[in-house]
Length: 283
Image 1 (cartoon, rainbow, N blue to C red):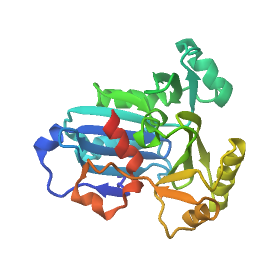
Image 2: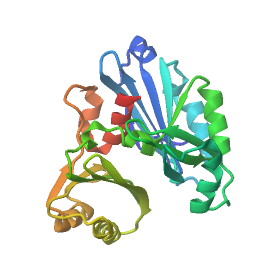
Image 3: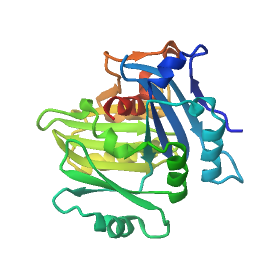
């Protein structure tokens, strides 16, 4: 049975609070996470995160099925359920040219047609564009059966809804979300989005190479740009020290002061899980 690598759930749980909470699930190629958020109290109740890439002989579908069948918290009834797909086959199209019939040709031009997934699209809140993305059809069908009244979004769409990213004119911001072997970059110039893309990496040098290439491409001043970092990264890590070599304005992502966290969260820095937690605030 798969075990959560992060299990931030209080030992004593209020059943009534759980029933009146929202369930937000993130699922991608290598990870399955969920957070429980009580919107009325603006309080995060719990979080679990599973790695899916260390189970040889099992398919992704089998891994996800095992989690949603055996995780006792996922057997509870929640007020609302939201599924956040974190798959990298994603494109943004301007609203004025978007049409649902473009979903397949646009995706296949960029990512090919080897994967026969389900194509979805959605309006990006606050911007005049749509996100077109591809997800595994069998995973989507499984989650639809389990969470029949669920709402579905893409990770990139909700990441752009972070109010911390709303900058003043000509202010440049790079937001990074770090994973074990992949990182996501969102580049902002004032209110304009210049880039949203994921990169695979093996060493800290790979990360700095991509970031410096992005700065060169978009004429970003490394001394002035604000680099906001989230995910599983610590100040003592070589990767974090690598960032400090090239950027003067490095900040940890933070949660709004108005939200409350269960005591179980205090063992971890806010930036470990802040992207997913912030998504719960805006759905």
